[in-house]
Image (cartoon, rainbow, N blue to C red; front, side):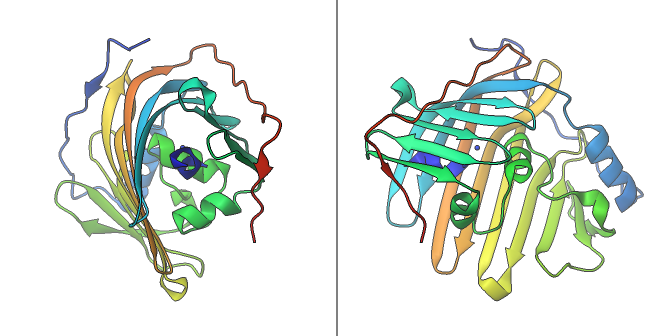
Length: 247
């Protein structure tokens, strides 16, 4: 069932990115501008992702193929199509032949796993290393974090308590945290990055999601990433599977 967590030819020019230096004189507004100016312009992304998942009692690991058509589709497939997911802005759909079940519905299933409300854009941002929320909608203050720029809202909103950290070279997210203490929900994501064909993409993502007493940890390791290839997104739920119905 690992693939349900995300509803998230070898490239010769892949390399890990180096670190930059923090400019303590840089204003929060400029840090945010740099984050959005440095976001990757792409149409499609594909690659292999190794996923390790634990819910505190059970641990699983699997390598999957991931394809993204920006702002339109996130597609994930385990070997031999045993498990597939097809996620659009309007619908989350996945099936698992091994367990004989499928799901079609909204983002409430993924929101429950991640411990916070998510939609398509938030999920896409999580997978490509962008801020989960739009930083341009609020005013922030800078936090002294040493090797990263830290940002927290001047006034925390009513829905989330949020905290962001950005590396100083490409202004990509190195850590972001969303919490709802009044609901005992907490989501933390930590990133490292690689450069692929002059574009910066996550190398690893470590996710910790707490909801009530449940703690889920997810580790993603990206391999063989490629941008802007012609892709298709084949998906059809096999007959005979039992539908997962959320309570």
